[in-house]
Length: 93
Image 1: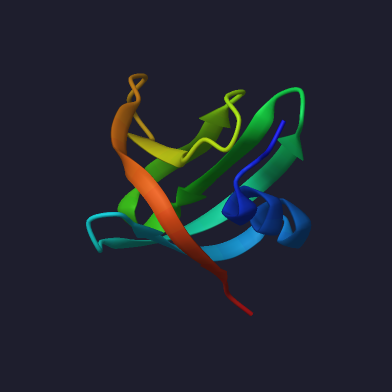
Image 2: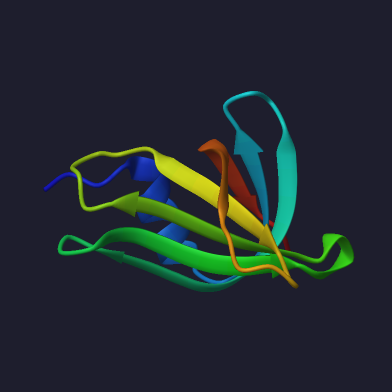
């Protein structure tokens, strides 16, 4: 199973402060608390932006070479909403 190159890179660099660029050009700063990549489960990361009171989830699902979907939800709500596909990511610091 091929996993997206960006997902592999993010998996190697791991948790920390990240700037995520979406396909529409928007950038989001997030602190990723967990980052996991495996052939069995694909890519999965969870994080937050405390300033904006948002939680983030990034996933590829288990499909080969899938794009990384970013979902978000406010800290005080239960429902996730899709934001878009992550096309680039830079680890800060």
